Image (cartoon, rainbow, N blue to C red):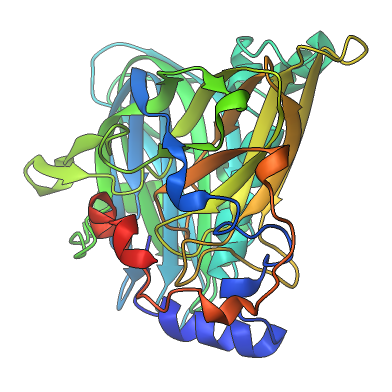
Length: 421
């Protein structure tokens, strides 16, 4: 999601931190001298795209009045993901109402309700929701995550809520949102995952704090989609990727690229509020990724995160099945990109990176994440043998960091790395 105000906001943050982001992680690794532009691509393929996502991000900036931001039909397991800025003087709230249009009862089981803190720091919002998603994984609630303990699964399941929608009725869900004041210029984001026995029609609204949300579901004005067109209903809330080749650490560096709208395409949907117009989720925001990477070889290697499309700040969980460590056969680590003095990586350069662990040939890496709001795609995961890693620069980073424009995610499929070095 590349914002109308983001360029100015990034400049302000750089001035505050005193850090040029092109070299923020310069001391971590010298990508050029580690062989970056000669790494072997390991293409991915989509194994499965499942379940319904209602994306609510257009209009991104809500004003001069509130109303219905997004609406659509979900059945079975589904997710509502919202991401909006209050562009009005008065405090507003987000409200989600489900409607049962059928003549029979509909049971809805709510699995997760995640929300961030509203703030003018857009990267903080995207980063926080990305982290919450991994701290309370949907797969753990559903009992399908092999990497969490039975105790954790029970804890997540206890938080589930079941409601009954009577025929031709409407009901407010995620009631905690009623208490959250979204002030002017603040971004607010969150999601709710649920399973319904039959179709429900969901509305996401931004309303003045004193307005009764359920009543507004009958009277609120439907707002037009904005030029970014990030709203609508999509199939593909959960995406499983396969890396088509086994990485051999004896053969040098390699990379896996995701969310590039080529091997890993953006999901397609319809905007039910606008005559079922075709829409594209450029960035796959709101999609939970699950990717397994198999390795072999005798050389130890490192994994690095490498943003390509622009500034990125979010979290990733890596579950590793170790081939050599008998005392810790499976380990789980969550890595946060950005935060503190370095709020993001990748602004105006493809040479930023962050290490995400050290491994041995034969290890299996299972990577989970959801593209972080306010961040840009595509991204790469770099696999670099220890022997090739150059940790320190011998020349100033500004001698070779390209001064290219940030790549907007509306055109991420056309990034030509040959033009950037």
